[in-house]
Structure formats: C-alpha cells, structure tokens
Image 1 (tube, rainbow, N blue to C red):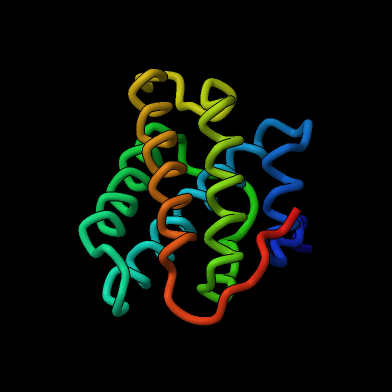
Image 2: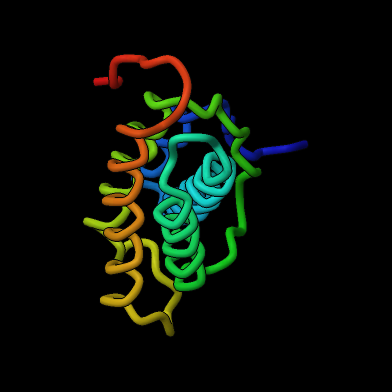
Length: 141
C-alpha cells in the first residue's frame, strides 16, 4: 500500500511545507526547490525574460537543495503551468522555506548559506513573476 501523501499541485505542497510532520515538511521543501529550479530553467529561454536572472534563480534553488536531506517520503510534485501566478506562488513558498530553513536542513548542512540561497531564489522568482511571458494572471492570495 502506498502511504505517500497526495502531491497534487502547489496547494498540497504548501500544506505539506507548513505541516507539523517534520519529514513531510522536509520532503516538501525538497520539492519546492526542485519545482522552482525546473520552472526557472523552463522560462530562461522565453522571449522577454532575463535569461541570466532565470539561470541564477535555478542555480540558487539547486544550491539550497544541496543543504537538504534526500526525502524519505512523498513523491515528486507535478509541474504546474508556467505562468506569472505560479511564479508568484512559488516565490511565496520559497520565502516560507527561507524564513524557516533550519527546520529543513540536513544535520551537517550550513544553515546560513542554505538560507541565503533560498532567499536569493525567492527574490529572483519575485522578479521573474513580473517579467514572465504569457498572459497575466492576478497573484493568488
């Protein structure tokens, strides 16, 4: 029997990140950073996007992810539609992760460095959400 939680999109991922189960929260942090990296890589080659900023965002996500332990539970989160509203929501999740990095770190990780990478990724995602190509959607509350 599969006891992995439902990973159905950003709301479920946000719930796991904020939840009380430490293992689920660490797995969600891993997924948030992986998802953010994939979205930044995806948009890097779109017209009108600052490619260097997008690649720097992906790099910050990857570096922050190196400070986390491999998840023991859960499954990869599905990639949501790459649009400005998604970018804004991912930026919010990165902000939550950066504010509480110590909750997600591997035992031998450098907390301040991981937090700095997560903060840089959040800041870059906020900027990307304003220059993201395609139709504009209002930011989710």
